[in-house]
Image 1 (cartoon, rainbow, N blue to C red):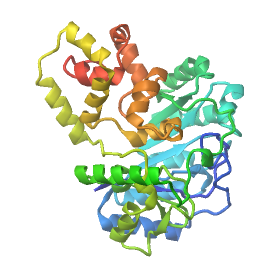
Image 2 (image 1 turned 180 degrees about the vertical axis):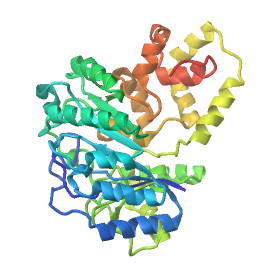
Image 3 (image 1 turned 135 degrees about the vertical axis):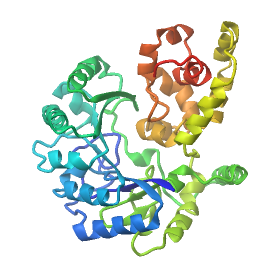
Image 4 (image 1 turned 135 degrees about the horizontal axis):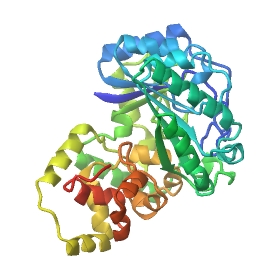
Length: 401
């Protein structure tokens, strides 16, 4: 069973964000959009495979640029797929917005400022007043029609914009929506091409080949396929499948057309792709079964003394290994929200332990570091990584998430 099928229903975005290959112009905008006929054929085949649980109408584009997004979401519900949409909500008029809410399970909205001056630094070309107006309309529609849609407004923290985070938080809370404070990569004013840190060239050095061989040996020992391949499938507006959601759409990462290939052949080509052998991280699926199993295991243990707690804080490598063994750190989620981890070509968990946690980054989609620290101020007194504290002590102590 796979988790997500990501479909870009358009081939453009209205913004020019500096942390995105689309915004940087590496992936060019076009006026092309997916047709109703093609979309339905893709969803029909997806259902017939019996392997996917969730459909996300996004990856590298702004889904509300498509005038029939609500129709597509409704069609997904014909097969009871869980539906996800991610948007910047910066468009002034979105005719399908209110009707689409009837068929969305999770809507994520990205922001990076409360004022236009600050928001537009990262969300270039965006209009924060349009975002706010759309959020007000969404809140009213959700309340009046008692819609079950889960709405999360993400505030991307770059440091320079942290002073406006509370203004946005209060605004979102007053609307009755979920607010999420996310640490992310440094300064979006730095003009960096994605090609500076992600190369898709075939030629590699002998040192890189040895790294590939070592990663292959590690994966053979694990005997578990990378979750970026086994749990997620990205697709463009033409139905073309691409390697994974961490690599941009281009000829080097194109696998083939979803409707023309068997699913087994698609997965075989993805797993054998040369970029996978070169990849700097290895993602394991973190599901509810793993979470429940780990929580049960921890609750059965005796509470450690304060002295031992301090020892674990001192031994940072032990903390990192403890989190790794829990299988609850989500590298795919972390990389998506912390692109500098990809830039540095480092282990995502190590990046989180040494850099990400200090700036408030989250280790997965269900644990909010800043909220945990706010609700458990004594953790800050220990100067302890909040996620490690929750896994090691918070579960047993029934700490508030």
